[in-house]
Length: 503
Image (cartoon, rainbow, N blue to C red):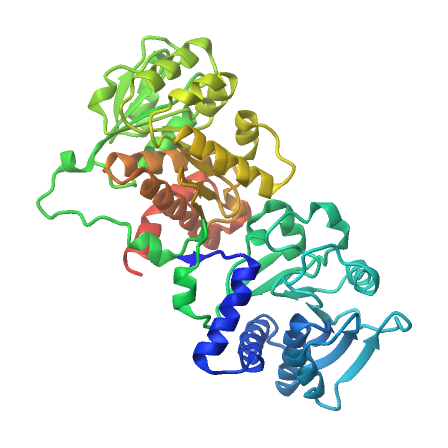
């Protein structure tokens, strides 16, 4: 997995890499710029594309100037706008001098703010990058505002200028370049995982520039970006002479009048997890729906006709989830309370399970150790209060996970799996096509099946989130993000497993 380090750690990684490899800082800049150039070239194959590079006078500007030179050498039309707002760094000055003479350069300062840009030119923002710690001012702010007033496609190098890497930029949200695409250098920055910042970075990719691995391995952080190999390494080998009893018995307590679809989706996803046995506990009137729609599942029938009122024989199951489509009926709430009080195993609570918990917050103190909560932002804020921004929400999740000894899966783009030891794993799979009814039910079912097989709770959470997101990515390739639906995601869980198992 890739560590998410803070900016001071990344700067130190640069220094250590330069020292150990016996190279100059300019050579490391050239390496980074070359990789950024290669990514830009992949997007804009047409050599008729023109670029306007807005370069600051620091090292981010140096990256931009090197990229400008490389684009020019590759046959693209390039113009540079150099923003002279302070002392120029040594490496930036070298790259400024290395620009070919036939690249047009506009020099901006406090006395001269004249530049022209073609409406079709791609803007490359290399004004500030990730090296700032405060709001842009003066000339830089003026340039940022001018870029944002244009309709050109914008690529930011490392981070959009004005965006803080390690903390909220909310206080100066009108002073940040709004990029369509960001190429971040070396390691991911925490700001890239915050939903409110997507307005500024658009889509982003990471270019790894060979920073010293020993330094990274020894650097302390609580933030990690999951990769396919990390997830593949968690998967258990299935013994050749195993039987269904070896792979656990999952129980999904789900459904109520009008919401049995949630139970069906969760059950079907659970059966794609590899678990040995599945029982769905549902209201009396709707057991035939489950037995018809999910014939491989057994059915535990509640005494109540239209809601769940109790969950019997909980000790016979390897893992239990509660919530999808359950309703918030008083009987259902009491069933959840008794489950929390009497279960000796970790639970998974989702949907109405979380909503009931939000109405009875004192029950949080009685959750079995390593219970998994899977809220989207709305459910999270009902549970733990509103947050000003993604940084504050994440910090609250870390505090609540530690306080209640539970695992919180904060769902969304780059879903965050938050552990009681304050470690956070950001998911790298998934797409906006998953933002549809049923997606959460699928995740709950998949996670329940993995937990039933004896995976450690946080392994089950990581695996389920990654597999679910990857199934969504495959479904989007087949059907588009717009047309894909919950059934498409379930069908592609098997392809997701193949992709991970044989990577």
